[in-house]
Image 1 (cartoon, one colour):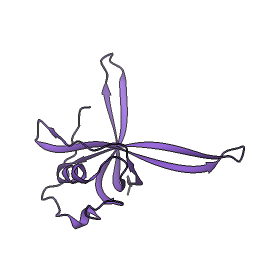
Image 2 (cartoon, rainbow, N blue to C red):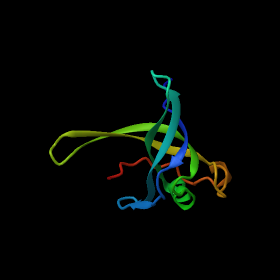
Image 3 (cartoon, rainbow, N blue to C red):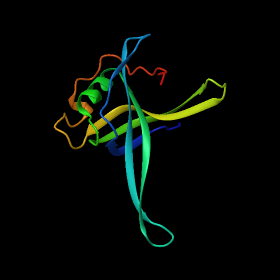
Image 4 (cartoon, rainbow, N blue to C red):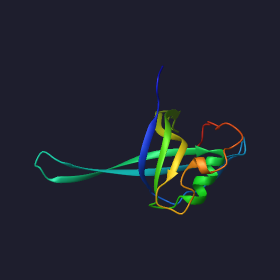
Length: 132
């Protein structure tokens, strides 16, 4: 069996804006989480490094995240990686890897603590191509 699972704890880099996919009417939210790590470099100096992770959520999860997540709020997210490919206006192949979010925990807000405390969406997560 294969496994494609991602777990992150980080901070949202912006307030979230929920949009609607016109073809299906599904809510979608795209956002970025930044994670930081500290380590000693070759010269034994402490260095801090930031990594930015593109995330996307659909349906009810998109609506909930859009309602509660604001810039610099800490959040735990998990699910899977997806890499999309498209051609730009010059015909060159472009790629984007993103985390499709299906579980989350709000870590420093007054929002419900976990996705489990929120009524489960009645339909399965919609996994659609989202234009950027």
